[in-house]
Length: 299
Image (cartoon, rainbow, N blue to C red; front, side, top):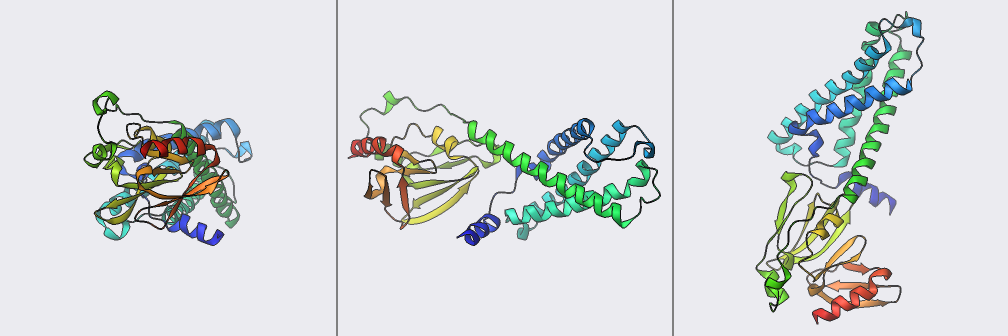
């Protein structure tokens, strides 16, 4: 089970991250420069004998922060261009991202090694020892800052909910819910404009959370399709309040109650069977009472 989960994590196709795209790259490296510069200035993480300095420590911090910023900008600007123009690179996975980051960390370490003679008076500047030390430090710092970025992005995304104006309920009184949804497409706004999308709520079987993404399982023209969208389940649910048949039955699932054909389980939780798919959807124990009320109202 662990091997399958790891494989799914590494090889699953995702959208090319906006932070590496040309229009966002300058902002990314500017933030990176500021964070690294302040971190080096405040904490002095790598001990160096001060008489070896050829310049002030502030200037040394600026050079060490600027070097990776320039490398990342040049590397991912070129990669972004290739991503747009080469079909083989249009498929993006986390394994690709980790591989490119590993290359960038190595290049940054090599650049830091080459800069030693500019910054320090040390006869051993060109030794294998310092090359290994600079590369190791860049991998260590790079992985730390990357994990910090992912944590911050995940935390921020889980609390930021985008709510769009919905149609007044009074306008829909007396209408059959199914017929109302069958002819309606909903515009879903994400945190990144280019990832915004439209879909028909009546075609949704269920949505499953996958970190800051969701998997939409849809029934379109009697064919079941799965689509990956860059939006959290909480954000997605917040824009669907006009559709009471779309019910969040579990912290990781939102289900179309109109597509449920069988309910099984007990007071510890339910399992839902749906039309058009063999996949089952769980109902958590905390949602049982609300599920029973909502499901009964549709009947």
